[in-house]
Image 1 (spheres, rainbow, N blue to C red):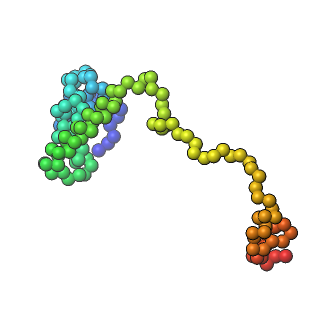
Image 2: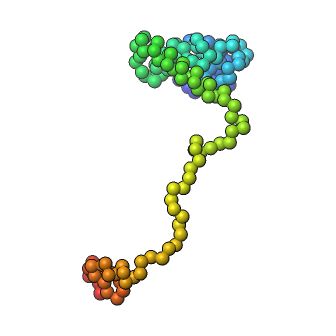
Image 3: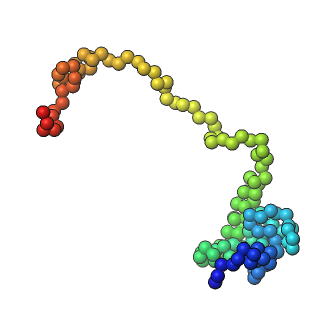
Length: 144
């Protein structure tokens, strides 16, 4: 099967095929366009949810073997999810500033302030070995 030209693709979108209904589909406005009725999606029983036929088609495309009972149950569940998403999409957010966190974050670290450290003689007194005001460690390389 060859890839349709852009013109053929547009014509296919406007013409219903087998199993398609002349209604607005997923990702399209819920208002009807030319040749479309007021229903929100193909084979849909309600405005925001997918119908059982749509779910069966999606399962077939996804290569999922669903029983009739699963189709009935999942169609209702998916409809509830899509209704919730539709409600979120209707929220008035024009005056809401974008945020990265729901609550403001505060720095829990102390300020980075230079303070005097222990005197060198006190530190070297606790070392196992010291020499020339430095820690003495065993030689690890054979160099002089």
